[in-house]
Amino acid sequence: MGTGKTVTMSFVISELAKRNKYRIPRPGLYYCYCHDGQAGQALYVVSVLTLALLDHVRMLRKVFYIWVNEEEDAGRPNPGADLRRLGQWLQDMISKLERPMHIIIDGFDECDETSRKYLANLFDHLTRSNPRLKTLVASRPTSRAHLGAATRIQMPSNSSRDRLIVEFGIKNWLDHLPENVQKLIADEMSEKAEGSAIWVSV
Image 1 (cartoon, one colour):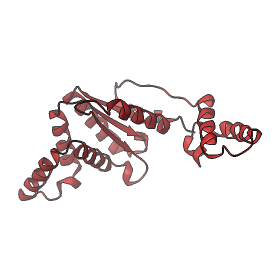
Image 2 (tube, helix red, strand yellow; image 1 turned 90 degrees about the vertical axis):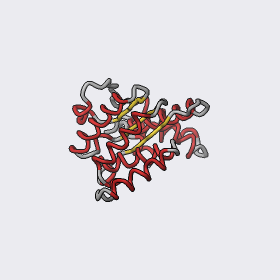
Image 3 (cartoon, rainbow, N blue to C red; image 1 turned 45 degrees about the vertical axis):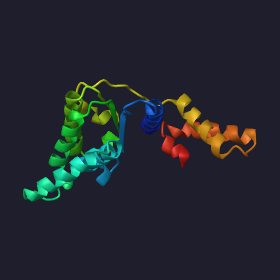
Image 4 (cartoon, rainbow, N blue to C red; image 1 turned 60 degrees about the horizontal axis):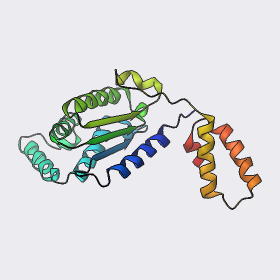
């Protein structure tokens, strides 16, 4: 059963992008979707966030390049594949940036146990080091213990919300069908969706 996490995160990202478009300096918006496997490991998440930071603040690319060379010259090869070193570099850079930033993580519950502990600790340090950074994490309730005392918003499954998502999909993809057929599809899919917009799109 879904609860609408991914749909909500997509909406938040879209809205932040719109609001930030004309702000100077443009706030950072760094997003990662976690899922089972490699994309559920802390190194993957930190790598995605680092790449997003380098894409947004391009002057940091030279800083990153110099850091990699210094690490390798010191006999510590491939620092970008070392979670501890890459995470520390990311934390150091974010702590120095004087601009608003948003980190959005979807599917935190799909990370493995060790990764959840590391990432929760990293996000805590990041927000403490830069008060202009806001972090939003979407997770099933089973993994919320790792997030400590962070502010929480509960999002239980909601049939009315499911129907809105279904009707939106019908309007975009099945608008050529007769109205009575559209209504039948909306009734059936809304009942069976159980909060899963991914199931609806399939």
